[in-house]
Length: 297
Image 1 (spheres, one colour):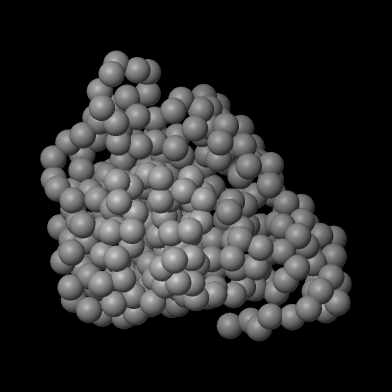
Image 2 (cartoon, rainbow, N blue to C red):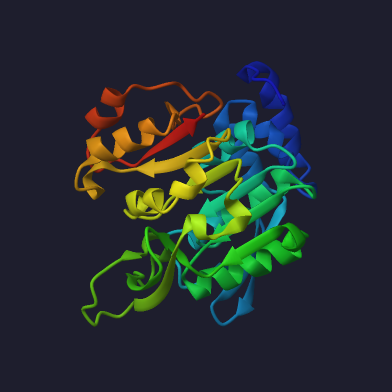
């Protein structure tokens, strides 16, 4: 893995990448700060093309072709113009995913992180993604295909929870990344989706890496992972934890820790390191602040 270096040695590297805008970006440069130079290099390599209807394609992370939704303001806009998303999480994934792993993307949306996972696990690995919104899943599937990852990538149009069946999901018209389970009220954007437990999928029982970002459904997803967790295998989980979204965030966190995980959290300003945090650190954070926990055992 690339080691961290200081700004003095990385500025010429990033400047060269900016000049060579016809080349692909080396994603391992993301582990060499400063971040703003990497972001600038990726942005300089970003290209996009309108395909008609609500489809566009763009280059993300300076190397992957990705299909996006022109009606999506909250995520596709950034991918079309900047070519990256949540750089802190992007950087941190490079520290934990290795060739040959099984990586799982729960709440895949357009599949940005699924693409990165596919590159990192390589031809001997596997990516299993879950995205219940058919518009987003279709684009994620097509992106996996054009980047050569279709053979190692499964995309399931299902929401994960602690039971099987169906439920209502509300998809904000211009913010599909904020889709969440909801009571049926007749609003535009409501859809019925299939739900299933994660441990009902044999392909992920021996997962090595799991990302969970489900806009408040994380606790239900965790309960549905019981069959995976009790195997007691080495496992890394990136879990978006927002205390205000859970009835009892302390109890949820205690359930997580009871499964034998060390507690860490991505530093938004320097994700090349993932510092350990205490239970109190997590619970004392602002209740509406999204924290990306890194759980390792």
